[in-house]
Image (cartoon, rainbow, N blue to C red; front, top):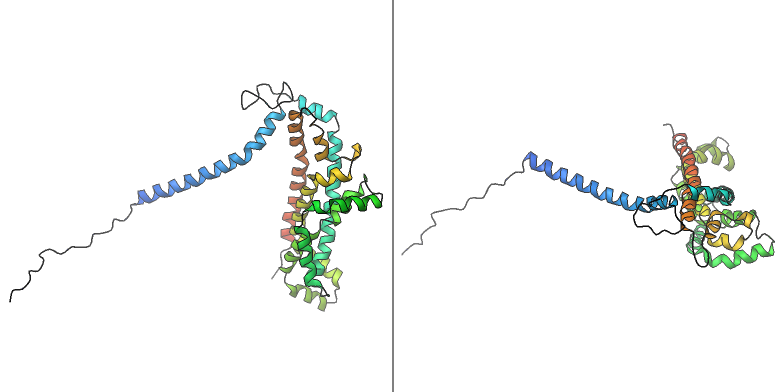
Length: 298
C-alpha cells in the first residue's frame, strides 16, 4: 500500500522584531509634541477674543471695529481717557458694592443653612434640600415679575438693598446644596468629640467646621461675586436710577439706535475685568490659608 509523501520543509515561526530605543524615543517625542500642539491651539483659541478686545480698545480713528489689518493701524489711549472722564468709575463702584455685599450675604446664609442640613435632624430635611436644588434649576427670569412686584410693594425699587435681597437671599439655593455636600465630607467624629467636651452647635461650627470648609466658602464667594458683578437682566428691571446703575447696564448705553461705540465698549470690557481679577487674587490667598488651617493633626 502506497504511503503519502511527507513534506520536506517545515515553516518556522518568524522572529518578532523588537523596537529599538531610538524608535521608542522618536514615538514618545512625537506624542509629546502633538499634545503640546493641541494645548497651544486651545490656549490660542481661548486668548484670541481677549487679545482682540484689548487691541481694539486701543484703536483710534473712530468707534467702529472695521480695520484693514488684524492689529489696528492707529493705537491710542483716548478711549480709556474718555471712559474714565464719564460715569464708568461710578458703574464699577456700584457693581463692586452689589457684588461684594450680595456675595457675603449669600455665603453667610448658605453656610448656616448648609450646616443645618448636614448636622441637624428635623422634619422635612431630606425633601427640603431636594426642593432647594429643584428651585435652583429653574431659570431666574421666571421669578423676574415676582421680584419686581415684591420690591414695588415694599417701595424698594432703585434702592441699594434691592439687589442684596434678591441675590444675597434669593440666590442661595445652589450655594446651600454645594456647602452642605462639602460639609458631609468632614468627619462627624470631630463633632461628637466636641459635643462630649460640652461644646454646642455654634461653638462646634465656629471652631471645628468653619476652618475646614473655608476653602469652599471662598470659592463660593468668588463664584457668587462674579455672577452678581456681571448680572444684567434683573439689574435692568429693578434699577433705573443713573447713579445706581451697575457696570453691565452702564456699558449698554454705548449702544444707540443707529450706531454703537465699540472702541469705548472694548475699553470698558478691559477695565471692567480688573476688579474681578483683584477680588480673585485676594480671595485666592484666603483659599490657600484655609487649606493650611483646615489640616487635622493625627
